Image (cartoon, rainbow, N blue to C red; front, side, top):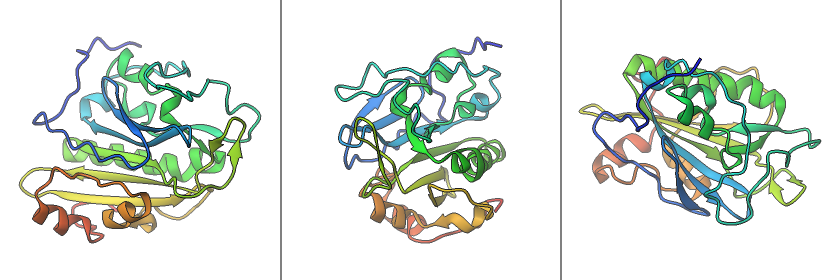
Length: 235
């Protein structure tokens, strides 16, 4: 099924909360932005606005894994993980980008992939992704940032692709009563509930060297990023 939705990003106010880069350079695709790290051969974050329209768009998976033409050098081919024992794990999930053919297909650029243990990618990471979609639907949309923590590694694949030891995800709802929640998960299988992985955004910033949502007023940023606040989240 292919949606005929208009090919332009949907945000509630045209806002742009792109994080600062730490190890990479920005690559802007139609519906999400990456920060690609040449040295790690993957992106340090994927940032996008997750709208109900994007979740419910109806576009089916394309599975067209391929080189990202916007990567300047040290790009990764679709077969680079072959035989490694690791999944080509999405940072911006395909299921988040069902709006139309462009949004779906762009999630299969290899710049949007990171080596994930299968039990992690298909287990707790998938559960976190589902929770974020449910939260986006119940909140009328969310800003999302997700990526690997690249200040160490748990292995190196052929060609120097770093295997991250852990991943993070952040969900942010703006407006008059903004709220934010972050998660850090080890790159391994787990049966623990989603709630158990919640951390402050300040903790993720400390671990990654990235400044998330720097466009927020300092008072608001300091208030919501320094604590783990479960209020308003179905956790």
